[in-house]
Image (cartoon, rainbow, N blue to C red; front, side, top):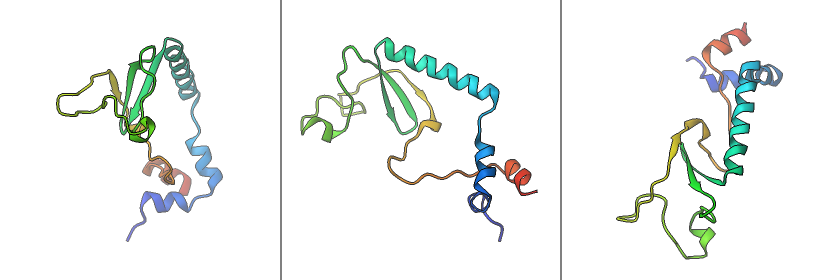
Length: 120
């Protein structure tokens, strides 16, 4: 039975994996651009709402906070998701790479091409 990419990645030296996940010069420029755009949104008063695979945007001048039931002390002002006729719309982008697993332990598995290069 062949090993999975997770098993194969786990068996590599951590320094090799660290080098493999480092950003290229072009990727670093793209990240710098994203950071500038993020700050520009914050400066303009955009409030971000991230849930599962979507990043939403709300008018932060009018929205105090977005949270779950525990954040509102039992008072639920308005749900962000479908709640019978109480559905709110706000622009969002589909961003599966932003999906959060809260406090779970996270792992990285490398692509087959990268594994072959590092295992050689």
